[in-house]
Length: 383
Ligand SMILES: Cc1ncc(COP(=O)(O)O)c(C=O)c1O
Image (cartoon, rainbow, N blue to C red; front, side, top):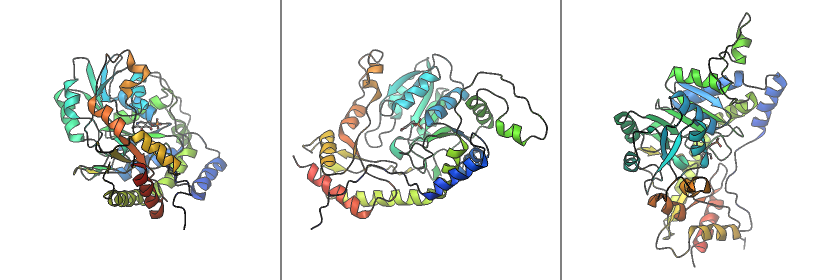
C-alpha cells in the first residue's frame, strides 16, 4: 500500500520554468537591465488586463502603498485606519509615509475590515482608510468608498494578495481607487520581489513615477527615446523604488499564465471545499456574493467544537509531511505597537488569528496531493 504521507507537500510553489529564465536571459543580453521598455510593457499589459487606466511598477507592494498614500495627499501625523489582521508591510507603509496607524476590527467571515469598526474610529485626525483585500478576497469596496466620501478621507486599497480576484465582476485594481499588488512568490504571479500601483488618476500615476525614481522629472527610458538631449530636474525628493527590466520580463511571462493560474486555483479551492464537507471541525472559506476569490491562500477555520487548536493542527500536519501556515498574527499585539495601543482589543481579529490556518494551494498541486492534505487534516483534528 502506498504511504499517503511519504511525500512532502509544500505550502506553496511559484510556477516557474525555462520561459521565465529565457525572458530574463534576453533582457540581460539586451544590455538594458534597469527600469526600461520591459517595465513599461508590464505596466501596460497588466493595466489592460485588470481594466486600470494606469499602472506604476515598483520594487515591492510596500513601496507602492507608500507612494499611493503620498500621491493621494497623506501628510505627516495624519491617522490612517487599517486592519490589524494583516502583515506588517501595511503598517510600515503608513509609518514611512508619515502617518499614524489606527487599527480596526474585521468581519468574522471575510477576514476583511468591518465598515462599522472603521467608522467608530474616525476622528478629526483621521485622513485615510487603507482597506486590505486579505488572502485574495476583496473587501467591501462600495462600503469603504461611501465612508471615505462621507468623511472626506483618502481611500487606498491593498490588493497585494488579491490580483485575479473580482469585486462585482471587475478585477480589484480596476475600480479607479489607488490599489497596490505584490509580486512576491507567495502571490498570484511573481517577479521575485515587486509591486504595482494601479490608479484611475493620471496625475497620481505621473507623480508616483517621479517619486519612485529619486524625484527625477525625466526617466531613463524617456531620455533614451528622445531625439535630442533631455535634462531632468527635481521638484521634490523621492526614493529608489524602481523595478528592473529583468523582473518585468519575468512578470510578462507570468502574465501569459494568468488565466491558467486563476483557473487552477479556483478548481483546487472547489475540490478542497467538497472534501471539507466531510470534516466537521473545519470550515472552508466564505465568499460573499459580491466577490470572486483569487485563492492566493486557502484559509480554513477551526470550528469552536474542535478539540485541537489551529497551531497544534499545523504541527501535526507537518509531522504528516504537509506544510501549512498559521493564520495572520494581529499587528496590535506585536511588541512594536504594544506601548501605543493602550490595551486595544479587537475581538474578531484575535479570534481569527487563533482559529485559522492556511492549507497548501499553488499551480501544479494535484488532486491526489489535495486528497492527502485533507486526509492528514482529518487525522490531525482528532485529539
Ligand atoms: C496584505 C499584504 N500587503 C502588503 C504586502 C507587502 O508586499 P511586498 O512584500 O511586496 O512589499 C504583503 C506581503 O506579504 C501582504 O500580504
